Length: 162
Image (tube, rainbow, N blue to C red; front, side):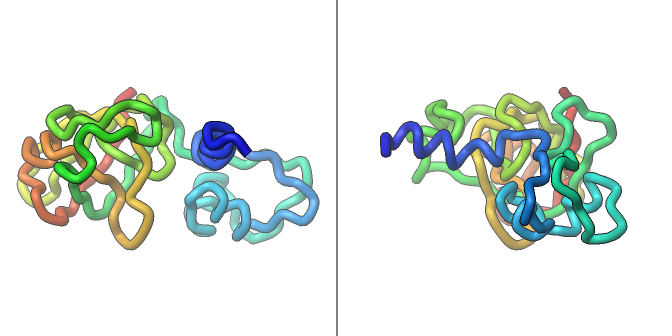
């Protein structure tokens, strides 16, 4: 298979905003395919049970238009080892730009990141994917991390601004 087509195929679940349930689907399988936990998938859709039906349309990513979406967890940063390399969006990573990686938000989404220890905030543009585990919710560029004093794992609040 063409590497470009394979990359696009693998990225599609992360870019989709909704998913239509197919026969044989489970919440676990849908959540995993879209980088969500079952709890988060249920919360996004107001589900109180694990019961789903073919044809049901589920939200699989937070809205990129704000609408009160927020997330808290730890921020980390990435820099020299990735500087100048392509991101998941196809852009070249610039550690001196105000950008970030998020596992699910659509590329181009602008997010206010607030350091919960000192109250400083910065607005970043999502142009990459990650982090993919633990309590980490966002990978900041070096410039963004420096702007809010988050040069080590730091508790943050994320809010979509546009």
